[in-house]
Image 1 (cartoon, rainbow, N blue to C red):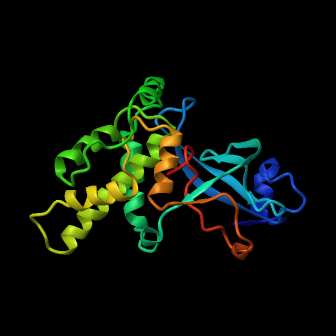
Image 2: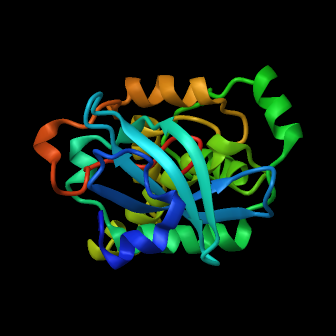
Image 3: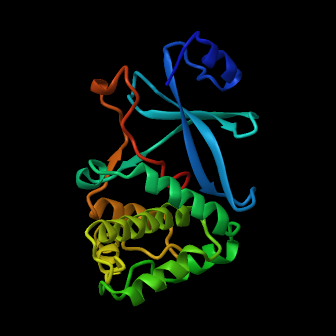
Length: 234
C-alpha cells in the first residue's frame, strides 16, 4: 500500500486520487489482453477506497516503464475466489502460469470477440478426462479477448496444481488431468476463446466466487483482500 505524503505517493504524481479524503492507495500488478497492445499487457493500476460509498475505485495506471496514465475515477468490482481455493493458493504456481502466458499469449482479436457473440461459452462435455482438458488447452492459446486471460489463467493454474499434487502423492501414472478437469468444471467451466463478460460473471457467481462491490470498513487500514478485476486482470 501507499500512504499519502510519503515518497512513494509523490512518485505517483497526478495518478494519486484526486480526493482530499484519500489517505491510502494500492498499486496492484495486473495483466490483460487489450487491442492497443501486443500480447499480454502488464502494468500496475492504482486503486483506492471511496470512504463515502466504500467502493473500490481506479484512479490511474503505472506502466512497467514507469509511464503514468491518469484516468477518470472508475468503479472496480473485484471477484474473490471461493474460500476453499483462497485458503491454499500456490503463488509460485501462479507465477509459473503468468510466465507461460507471457510466452504463448496471442494478440487481442476482434474475430474472437465476434465468435464469442455467436458461440456457447459453456462446456458441453464435462467429463473429467485428458481429452477434454486438451480441448480447453487449445482454447488458451487462441487469439484472446479481454475475458480470455482470466479464464485461461485459472484453468492453467488448476492444471498445474493438479499435476503437482499427483507428483507429491507419488502417483507417477497419473498426470492430474482428471483432478484438473474436476476443478475447472467446479470453478471455471468456460471456454477461454468464446466467453463474453456476462458469461464470465454469471459463472463466477454460480461457482461461489464473491463479487466485492464495496470494501467493508473492517478492512481498513490494511490492504483490501480482493482478487483480480474481471476483464482487466484474472
